[in-house]
Amino acid sequence: MTSRFLLLVVCVVLALPVAGAQADQGVLKDARGDARPAWDLTRLVADNGLRKLRIEVHYRGRLRPKYGLGLLTNVKIDLGYPAEDTYDGDFTVDMLRGSSDPHVPNRFDLVRSVNYHVVRCPGLQLRVRYGQGLLEFVIPQRCFGSLSGPARLSAYTYTPRGPSDKADYIDYWGPWVDQG
Image (cartoon, rainbow, N blue to C red):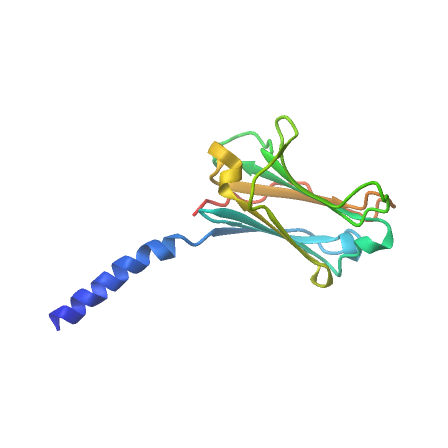
């Protein structure tokens, strides 16, 4: 009986760090129907883990950058602490797909907002699910340097070529999402 109890205690203690390694998640919702379906942002999700920040951008309907209008999406990332009183946006994830200009290539960049410098960091990932209306960005925490920590997001998307009803903005900052 004593050895079983000791084994149970050891298993519980070993499992604690694994439970603490899960990412903290924050969800920011936007009104549906305030833009055309392929550009209508509905939800922004941040999973702020110890090793990576995963961001999901959800759209109403399918993504349609192939119609010659393109799809440009920017997610602003504010890193710091909830006590920070400025809404500055330390980094921006910049993604362009399907531009109608053949001289403009598809792009996916992490940009430092202070000097608009593109951060070259191995491990950046972009997954585009056109049929599901979903973009997923994965950014290693090391890309943020000493700023890695709690995060909050804001986003906008639009067509680089086309009418203004093919754009949507989440102008406000989402909740702080602790790292961990």
